[in-house]
Image (cartoon, rainbow, N blue to C red; front, side, top):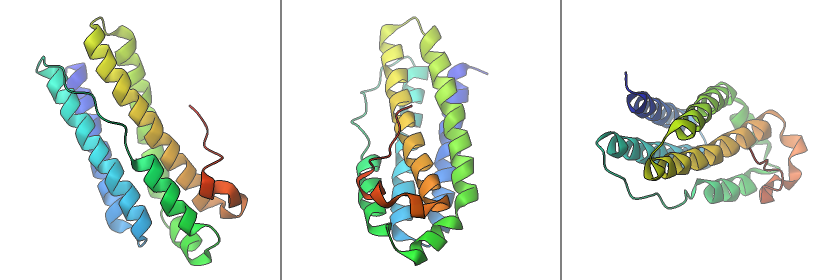
Length: 162
């Protein structure tokens, strides 16, 4: 199987995972965040298909999921009902984190061995977006598992760089 076929498959798998989390969440904000993540994965899939066909896709504009997550989580801070609902989704967040981690490592390897500068630029763009996705899901997971420690999370001041 071609490495780009594997990348396309991973993107579709991530999209499906995010759509499932969005469908199963009882919180509108979480549904919005994961729907945006799914839409981003669809864009990544289309970019990979374009690379596979030998064309260079137009680079994505930066994802809005981080800004949306900031706004949504700001409204969650201090709400015990929301904290309880978020805890119900921990398994989904763990799965999403594992998949994003695998995706990050895969795109890092692809970009490192890619000889074509234009293709490498596309792969690095996707890699950068995946890092943002990982950050969003990681922070949601941390907030859901320990909301009492994230009083400043409304500003996402605790976002860690990968």
